Length: 141
Image (cartoon, rainbow, N blue to C red; front, side, top):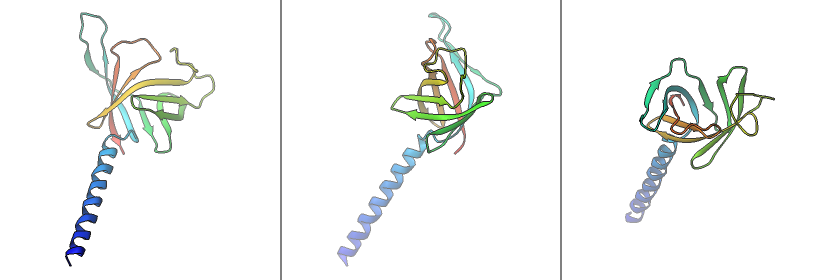
């Protein structure tokens, strides 16, 4: 009987541990729909910058299979994304997407990212903009 109770306790311990790990992963998952809500730009060395609300911000929907949908560039709305520890690379599936930025190759955008409290923070690497930061709110899983 003691062995049965010990076995049951052990199984319960493992299952609660993996459930907590899964919840932790989902809290920081990029999968879902994110809407741009604020921008931060530090325009000078003397100015610390400030968050500015953005009305009608664009969105990204990141799918678990590495694809995304966005309304950032109008008709060019789909692509694939790759993540590493601190960077996200967005590659749009359109030919000759010209954003006017210095992306290389054309249609590919690399940004630093972090997720905290259901907010996604992106900072572009394809333009020189020290202190630029975009804040997205998770609006859908």
